[in-house]
Image 1 (cartoon, rainbow, N blue to C red):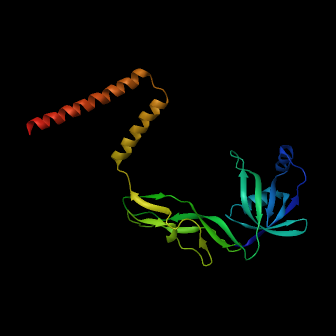
Image 2 (image 1 turned 180 degrees about the vertical axis):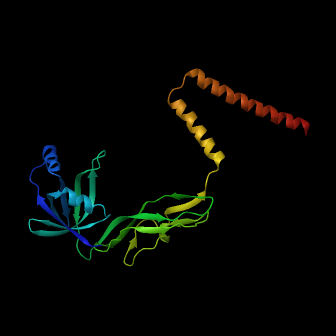
Image 3 (image 1 turned 30 degrees about the vertical axis):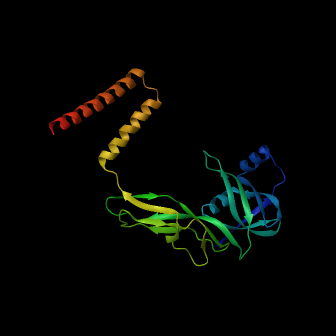
Length: 230
């Protein structure tokens, strides 16, 4: 993975007020740490950092006070509404060093007729050389029949990459698609539960319960009649 260069500035002011001033200047507060060094508080250019973070596990060549540090994003905080960057933690890595990272899974294609894809994992944890982290893993499900399962051990990894996730962990499988009747039944059940949660009038709930009991009693009577005829 190519390295992206970003110039950072040392940060000497701390606290919420200082952080707000940094963000108003379209910059992002951050911390750089790792390899036994003291944490370095920095300010990074917001636009450049936002572009860089669009690439998962992006490797950054960070310039701070004339020093060049090779870093990986460790923790990224975003505004829950605006999605803007609030803070970033960067961990120092060395060339040739093995790191553990999570790499996303991209699924392509459509499963076979009558099937429905159920994806259990969206990423795999791996060990890889810091400068050779794969961007993502691709799984093609085109035409996969019902009953097919893909486990972590089945995903093809690049050379020099080691799987950390449990090899037997289920990544995805193909289930039978629900019938129209099953969908209608689930929707009806959800509507009943929603009605109870929204505190329907007691009379409505009691009427529904009475109708259900009457239907059950009628069914039981029908069963007795069948047994008498036999």
